[in-house]
Length: 266
Figure (cartoon, rainbow, N blue to C red):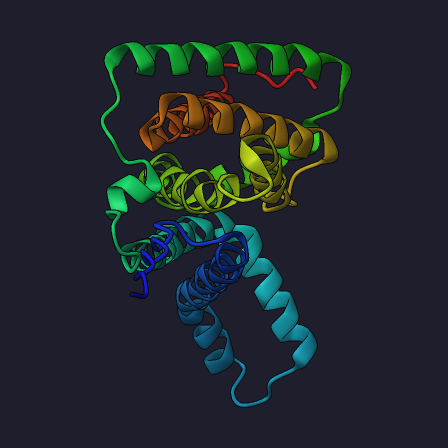
């Protein structure tokens, strides 16, 4: 009598190569949504310019108009594009995580409850990290990134929208993508937890090429810290809270600079 072999159980999590492929799709959706949202925000001003040109469109004048638009409304464009792209990106993360059988979206991404003790511990860790980073910044010129953030804040038009986009939308999408979808897929491969944390931290840091080398290194190290906390707590909420806290502190400092309460030491 022939024995019936037990079927190999289906993996609940996407494998490493599927994670890479689907991750690229998610990032493409995120990028396209961001570009389209930016175009929608910029369209009224560009339409007004084209109407004022009376049909005689000079390419060089158009380029100058676009440059002026981005220099005066960069913060608004970023605020809107971050919110829109985060919604679409997070939607596709949920879609790809949801099609796996035998695991819920919350289980896949680690969206489980976190205790008050874990929240306090995570915040203490990130405060220590920020303190050490600020101390190290004494020896490094970080004025470029500070000027970038000041420009974003001064051209946000609606500062409240900027706060919402950077404290709520950006942390939720980025953590769900890097410390949720990608980390979960990579750490169950040959990379293991250490390799997964390193790879996702590198990918996250490369997303912030608008900053200087020092800031990108800090973001990589922060990604390592976030990845460790994510694995230790088993909850994505821990890193979402840490990420939101870092962005909130940064925005508070920028707002205080704009209002003249503090000056940037660099």
